[in-house]
Image (tube, rainbow, N blue to C red; front, side):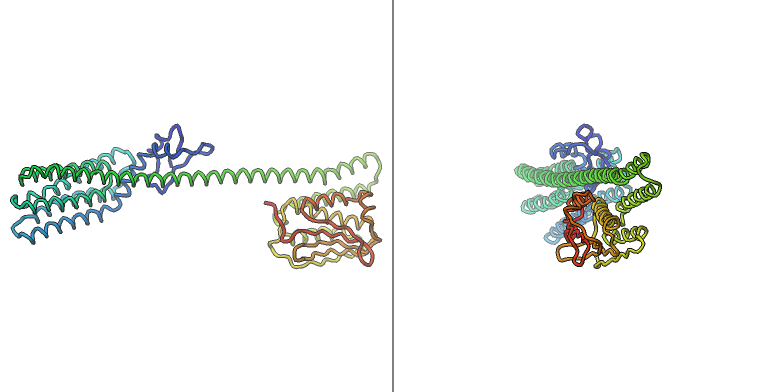
Length: 450
C-alpha cells in the first residue's frame, strides 16, 4: 500500500489502493499529514474512487435510463401513432447497449490501475460511447412533427430529465462535460433547424448550464466526502500505529525495569550473601559447616528470586504453594509447620516485584523463627478479610519484643520496607499463649502493577 509522506506523497499515489476502504499510511516516525495537503495530493486517488463508486451501479443506471427512454417514446406513440419515436427509443437503447457492453468488458477484464494507459483508453471509449447516447437523446425533437411546438418543447423537457438521470448516475467530471455538451448541441440544433424555434436555443443552453452545474456540484460534493473518509481512515491508521509504537515502548520499558529489578534482587540478596560468606570463609571466621549453611542459604535465595519471576508465581495461591514446597526441604527436626489457607480465587495475582517482596518477607519471618524463637510449631495462616488479605506467621517460641528485634537488626526494617513497597501493613506482635505473630495485611482485592 502506498505510504503518505510530505515529500514523495504524489508519486506514491500511483501505487495506492484502488479502494478508499484501504487507508493511506504514513511511515513510522513521520508527522501526521495535514488534511489540506492530504486532500491535494490524494486528488487522483479520490477521482479514481469516485469513478469506482459510480461505476459499480452501471447496470441499474443504464436500465433506468432505457426505461425512461421507452416511457417517453411510448407516451408520444400513444398521443400520435404516426410519430416514429419508437425508432428513436431503439437507437437510444442500442447506444446504451454499447455503453453497457464496454462496462461489462471492463468489469470482467479489470485492466486498469489508476492512471494506467489501459484505463485511459477505456475511459476515452466509454466517454465517446456515452456522448453518442447523450447526443441521440437530444435528437428526440427531430422525430416529432415540426409544427407541433408544444410537443417539441415537452420533448426537450423530457429528454432533459433523461439527461439529468444520466448525470446523477455518472457523476464523473470528464463524462459530464462530454455528455452534457453533446446533448446540448444536438438538442439545440434539433429545435433550431427542425422546429424553427431559434429562441428555444438560449433557453436550452441555460437549462443545460444548470444541468452541468448540478452535475459538477454533485461530483465535487461526493469527491469531498470520499476525501474526508480517506483522511479519517488515514488518521485512524496513524492513531493505531501510534498506539502500537507506544505499547511497544511501554513493553520494552517494562521488560527493562523487570530486568533491573531482578538484577538488583540478585545483587542485594544472593550476591550479598555469597560475598559475605566468601569473605568470612577467607578470613577464617566460619568453618565448613557454617560455610555449607551459608551456601545453602544463597542457593535458597537464588531459587526464591527465580520462583518470584516465574509467570505461574503471579497467582498468590501458586506462590504460597511454592513457598511451602521450599520450606519442607529446610524444615528443622522436631519443628511442626501447619498451613491454614482460605480459598483464593484465580484473580488473586501479584506482579513479579511484589511476588518477590512477599516471598522475602515470609522467608525472613520463618528464618527468624528457626534461628531465634526456639519454637516447636509454626503456623502460616492466610485469611481473607472483607477488605484485606491477612498472611500471618505465628510461632509458640519464647516471644519477641518488636522494638528490641528492630534494634538487633533481625531484618524487621527490611521487612517493613518491602511491605511498604507492596502497599501493605506489617505488624509484629506477641502471640496470645506465648510466642510471636507476624501479620502482613494486604489490600483486597489485590492491586496489581501492570
